[in-house]
Length: 337
Ligand SMILES: NC(=O)c1ccc[n+]([C@@H]2O[C@H](COP(=O)([O-])OP(=O)(O)OC[C@H]3O[C@@H](n4cnc5c(N)ncnc54)[C@H](OP(=O)(O)O)[C@@H]3O)[C@@H](O)[C@H]2O)c1
Image (tube, rainbow, N blue to C red; front, side):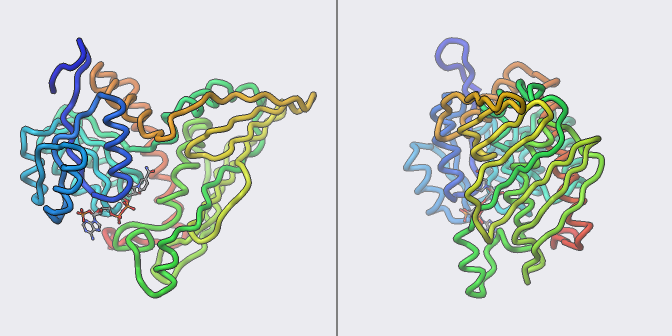
């Protein structure tokens, strides 16, 4: 770590994965001025060099072990296919690097428990890059949720037709529709509304999942019911159809209307009695990844274990929900066989 701009610490960042999300993360890292891209990993050194050249990163690797051992990084961002997160995160934690792992953090809670323990033993932090729960409008919603009075129902969804489904229909098996890579709609998109629900309402008492199954053995979409005391939250997710309606949370005193769950750009409260509505949102950065980076780096800088444990608790509950939902429907990932 080195000092930059007075007392602000800048950590040296390494990246794993070279797709669009990695570029978005690197851009957000630059914007935050908290992480400085130092090293890029790819299975192909040409791909690594291309990203490194674009962002002026001095180091490239096509050997993950070498990068994990390297002094050129303090923290790694992992954006590889889901099934690889576990082994890759472990490798970096073992070498005392902080890890920011893309959602869904791991394939199941056994992997989560193992890795969480390893991070603790090595005195480094492990974060799940669940961008939507760190943004200002999510925080506003959490602060104001009591305005709705006794909560009775919610419909939170992420339903977005994936261009990779076209490939799937042509007979290919893109990673995100593959059980080999721990894919499927619930773990890919469902985790956004589930994370928001867990952040707002806590751990549900019961869950049940009703998936639309694909021939590859994972879900293309589905409906997840989260049961709470006196309140039911319905989560819809799909990669094989598209939604054009907002999400809603209904209480006895009023309802919240969210244009989207990730990110929430518009947030409205409508009073049940007067029918008057109020806009609660504030403008957010278009690249909302910046908010998670600010939160993670602040937690590291201040050794804020309380906030860390709160985030990790949410991460584990979300994973427990998706794992339970999969088990109910015999959706078994290859790494679990
Ligand atoms: N937070 C968000 O908004 C957001 C958005 C999109 C994705 N994600 C998450 O980011 C992660 C990556 O998603 P993605 O859609 O970018 O995945 P992807 O395109 O399937 O793969 C990402 C990268 O992993 C490497 N890779 C691909 N196939 C591999 C294989 N068979 N073995 C080893 N490495 C392989 C590739 O990098 P190299 O060839 O360079 O090694 C590729 O650039 C997932 O966990 C996803 O959930 C998050």
